[in-house]
Image (cartoon, rainbow, N blue to C red; front, side, top):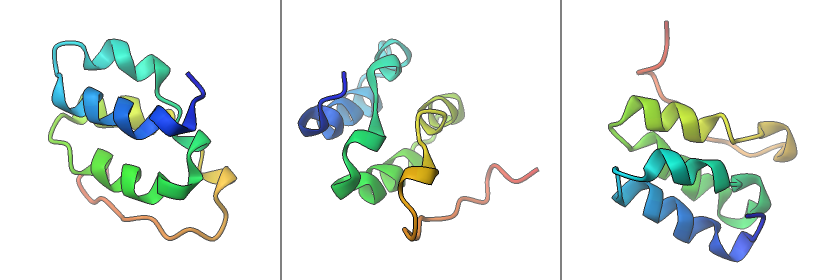
Amino acid sequence: MNNSSQTEQLLSAILEHSTVSMQLVTFFSPNDNSDSFTAMYRRILESTDDDLVFSLLTKVSLSCLPGKRLPVVNRFVL
């Protein structure tokens, strides 16, 4: 996808439409929209579907955002 103006809209669709969410994750590129990266990251962590959260977080590259403080989630601690 690589269209930063539609990244948030795609995330909304992924989170709202559970029947097709895993197919849409392929097109999710959160690193293309650094302005709203933290807000999107927080929305991902608020999801109750652990498989979906994992799939979305695998698309995130924290190295492209040095110095950002991101929310911490404890439910994935082993």
